[in-house]
Image (spheres, rainbow, N blue to C red):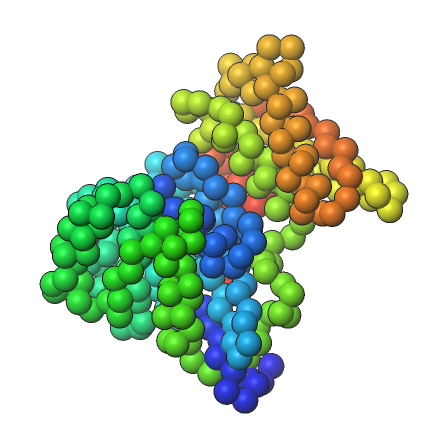
Length: 303
């Protein structure tokens, strides 16, 4: 595919520790919801691609799992997905939470400062930080090795404040290149995966303690029943029998609430009425089983 005359395009990887707002930032940059969000660590488990097209160019964003210590095979996959996103990247966006920048954040920021490609450090969540905190954080990055970043930008992915500035900074740094995706395409994720992620998002929002980390969702069937109705069958997997009861809830009410909330979002996604059938099943220690990881879509891409 050849490049259009003067057309700019490229790939920008979004990296950082868990819970700094990377997925919220991706959604804000693209202008549509392509990644699920929650206040739970490890919400993003795979590389999520979001496409932002504009007159004269296109930026393909790669949202990644939070950089942290892997504790199981799923964790190893997640860290591989994060670092694999750097292959072929034309720019890097490192994200930290304003007012909550700790030693582990700084270690990541300093590590990527050495990368020889355009990079922007984003201090997200300014809507939650006082002005003096924002000023203090900015001042703390006004010295080597942080001066190797093209820009240190405070913004709020939640409110959108500063997001246009980030788009502009990245677009200026994109090389001339082809139109990688059609202008009306915003993600490469198949519908069944988007549906599975929306179900998992609603489960994350309602479940507490260690249960969310052990949840996986597999959409087994998406069937168009009529022009205005789609039927979806999905399994929610948990690692322990005790967790099955928690996900089901008393008289099945928890599962019903998860299903109702997920169905509403899926109907928006598919632009049709949806009949969502959910089952809860136990797969012990699935996060350490290669076959289960592949079944749930957590298989490392080979290229």
